[in-house]
Amino acid sequence: MSNDELRIAAVVTIFNPDDKVIRRIESVLPLVERFFIIDNSESVKEKIKDHFNEHKKVEYIFNGENLGIAAALNIGIKKSIEEGFQFILTLDQDSEFENKSLEILLAAVSSDNNIAIYSSFHKNKFFTNPPPNQDFEEVSDVMTSGNLLNLEAVKKVGYIREDYFIDYVDIEYCLRIREAGYKIIRVNTSFLLHNEANLSRIKIFGFTVYPPNHKPSRWYYKVRNYFYLKKEYQKVFPEYFLLESRNIRNNLIKVLLFERHKLEKIKYAIKGYLAFRKNVKGKLSE
Image (cartoon, rainbow, N blue to C red; front, side, top):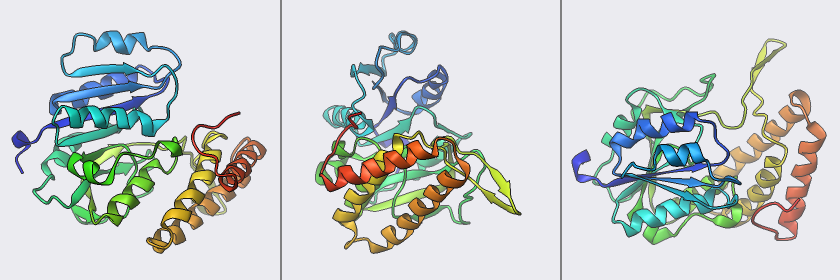
C-alpha cells in the first residue's frame, strides 16, 4: 500500500517528561498527518505546550491528573477515528525511532485487513534481544510504543482497557485482537529505541543479568493485572502464560538479588495480588 494513500495520526502519552520529548515528537511529525499529545502530568507542561502551540498538526490535551496510559491512548484513538484516520501510531515519551525506522514501518503496511497492528522491533540500550533473521514476523503481543494500530480493528474489538491503568494494558489488547481473529506483525528491520523501566546490567559468576529496576509501585500493577489477564485469557492462550509466569518469577528473583528497595517492591507485589483477590481495579490508592 502506498504511504500516500494512508491517513495516519499519532499519539504520545506524557507524564512529567524531560525536554527531549520535544525532539522525539518533531522527528515523527513530518510522517503523520495529525499528532495528539496527551498530558497526564499534575501540571501543564508549558514549554511543550508553547512549542507546539502554532503547529497545525499538533493538539496538546491536558488531563489535569494521571488517568493512566490506557485512558490517554483512548483519547487519541477516539479523536483519530472521529477525524477519519485509518491508522494511529502509538508512542511513549521515552522512545524514538532509529534512523529511517519509521519510514520502514509505514512502508510495511499492506492491504491485508486482518492485520490489526504493525509494530517496530523494540531495541533496549544493551540490545539484549536481537531480532530473528526475517523482515516480518507474526507475534503474539507487543508493547504499546512504536505500533501502527488499524482503526478499523479498533471499531470491532473496542478500546483499550482503562481499568488496568498501566501494566498489561498492551498485552490485554493484543490478546483480545488475536482472539477476534486479527494478526500482529512485527517489522524486524524497523527499530524503536526503548528502555522499559531502568534496565541495568550486572555480571556475576560468568553470567550477565539485566534487572529491570521498576519503581516499587509498578509491581502492584504488574502482579494485579497479570492475574486479571490470566483469569480472562489463560484458556485461550495457555502458551503465553507459561512464558509470562516464568518472566515474572525471574524478575522477582532479580528484585531480591540485585535491586534496591526490595522490601518495598515485594510489599507492592503482595498488595497487587490482594487487590486482585478483592476485585480492585483502576489507579492505586495509597
